[in-house]
Image 1: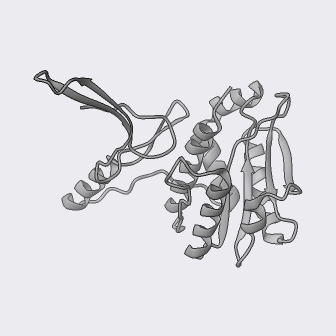
Image 2 (image 1 turned 90 degrees about the vertical axis):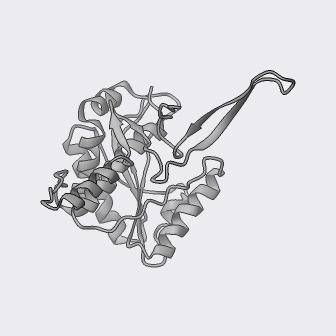
Length: 239
């Protein structure tokens, strides 16, 4: 019914922004290339977090089943890390509090890369599965609470605090101008769908070229389609 990339891409941005609003340092370890294999993408994220010296590795997903009967939230943790279990329980409790069926904090027994290696080198790793994207009950609840509601619940589970989305205004006109300029390049969520912003340098990733005309005296045109970043819905490209 829903697309996992769209759902996870929408709510994890709320989580990042919420944590930052509370003063936490956050690194997005999503691979920049869509062409990576699954195993390469997983190792990229974990290794980047390790190199950065992250205390927590929090992987945002969305669930699905072959028979479309699963529903509700769950958070997977590593049985060998008590911090992982506690974190999973806290996040699961807050997601359940906004209306998703509570499947609990669950020990991962599927040899998952992010659970195994996300709990190495002093990190505490979990995987969040807040809803089943192929279950109508969960889809309806997602549409009701939105990415904002889900993301803020996760932030509260992580920190015990409610995230603030209030933007502090500055009396300094120069500072205000800089904030407005930065706002141009922020991702946005509309109707629970993530739309990626332009790169701050206005750089697009071209993924399709189409040639029209010929080189024997006639006009010759090249049209292209592009995206600004990997993930989310492709934004409108204006010439």
